[in-house]
Amino acid sequence: MGISGRIIKAVSGFYYVKPDIGEKAEMPPKNGSVYQCRARGVFRKKGVSPLVGDRVEIELTATDDVEGNVIKILDRKNSLIRPQVANVDQALLIFAIHTPEPAGDLIDRFLVLMRKNDIDVILIFNKDDLGSDAEAEKYRSIYRDAGIRLLFTSTLQNSGIEEVRELLKNKLTTVAGPSGAGKSSLINAVSGRELMETGEVSKKIGRGKQTTRHTELIEIQEDSYIIDTPGFSSLELPEMECMELQDYFPEIGTYKNECYFTGCAHISEPDCGVRERLDKGLISRKRYDSYVLFYNDLLNRRSH
Image 1 (spheres, helix red, strand yellow):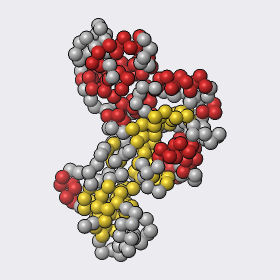
Image 2: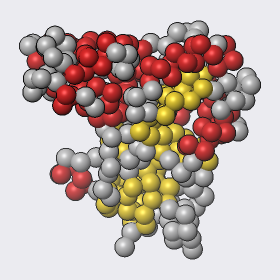
Image 3: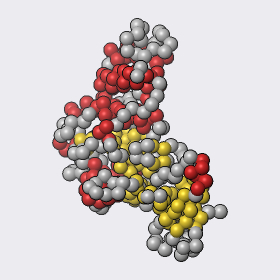
Image 4: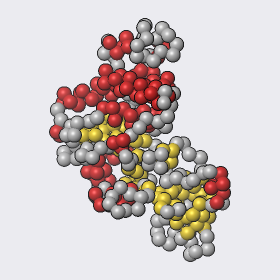
């Protein structure tokens, strides 16, 4: 039987595997943390590639017990394309409460993507010290039925940090957010050290100047990892059928069986239960507008 562990980094065909705690304690990797591994050719023949985040089994080669081969990829619960990562437990989406103003359609695109991949979302409005109670209440109203966890944080006032830290414990979390939202400051505050200083982040996740692109998990606490989501400002909807979209808006999907017509798109059909609730203020107008925008986007894809 091989040594089990998790792939925490992939660079140029090498996979760096951190062994499970207590696994092969009599023979830890000589560098003290990870084994450098290649993937066996059998994966290529099957058209399968190991991903960062994969739980794997490895066998050691004869090179002083620091190198090995990935011999088995254990079952994945999910996988993402950007970043290429497997077994994500949750997503942390960070926006500033204002300055810059949050982009609602971008938030909603991300929520659709994560819900389609069955990944829980924690939506954070950071820089809470710059916002008012009225602004906070506005966002609570918009996302109250979106099926997510909503938090307000301030690294300046150290508010909400402990709650975020607890939510990240023993999880693999993909972290996303636009520039200027205070993402790096928040992660540093949660971890208690400078993990996401500009230069260091660039080196770790391959987004900086003249760095080799690679994917890596950043350990913020024991067995608690984060991974950055690149290309966030150009996030596209995943491929799906138009009628599938309502299932990723919980506040809309809840009422889909109350429409007169089966297969109601909730846009222009008469006797629509969703629009009745929209008119009564039971569904957020901003969320509904995102739904209509996305539905038309998907419809246009099918016609091209």
